[in-house]
Length: 421
Image (cartoon, rainbow, N blue to C red):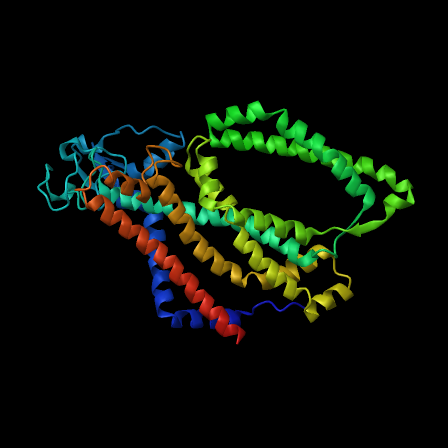
């Protein structure tokens, strides 16, 4: 019934992708960055991976996770001052937020450093406070990929859902009774009033408290809004006793979603993000949600265009003739065949999200003050132009990461074009 890709087709796709040398090399760079992000605490930390103290074995790096969850408290917070029986340390013996006062005030990578031995060397220098730049770069990889992948998950959910609805139903396939339309239109103003207007002070207070508190208040307001709309929908059913209100009319879903895409595209994304970020307490989750919320338009366009083509295919006509439910036609037969171009958009979108986060961090907004990222390292270089390593190393990391995702996107584009020929 539906022309989903077979395992053989997927293998052929991988073979074609391997022939794109630049994209395939970039793919392994991204895999390396993911590994660095996952094992950042193992690669750079002020605690040993394994230590024996007073003939007892400890795993301090792993113990810090349970401490963060509140399960147990670390009995020895400063392992560098403890004389252990033996210890296995990470390659970089500094945590991202650790301050080395003996090597503060921009210690250069090749300069003489006040350290016990070369194992405690700052390989890429320090910043003004004495924080290790290499450790910050390693932990900044986790921040960059969390922002890129997390925001694209949110953008993908919004873009794929809206694009699917717009392309599948169009302006004429979805029909709603006049009673339902009148009921929704009449109750939308009371819903907005009681859901958002009456609760504006609670929402504003939550914005200044934390991002999660704001999300909770917004969800509660949205539930109130939807409950009033649902109430209006069921009340409007009483109007169907009249013939005029029983008549169904076409609901222009495609036009509404298309206009939403145009509105979001017309306003500069960075300007919208700046407008929201400056009003809310900084957090990593805020950056991920905001970037994702303003990055869905390209995916929606791609999915909508594919769905407009797919819904006219023979297998879709057969599914409709056999009486398959609309949800099955949409999710099982149509959507899987429309997702090809989305992966290309996601690849480019991750690169754009990382650049956006770096720009916000460079401006000193978005992330909390104590959170180190590549953009914040670049920002610190403005205060000391002589500290070239604060600009070169994080700038190179951003360049490599963004270029890798762009090359992957370019390679996927070429493979998709070759398969269509």
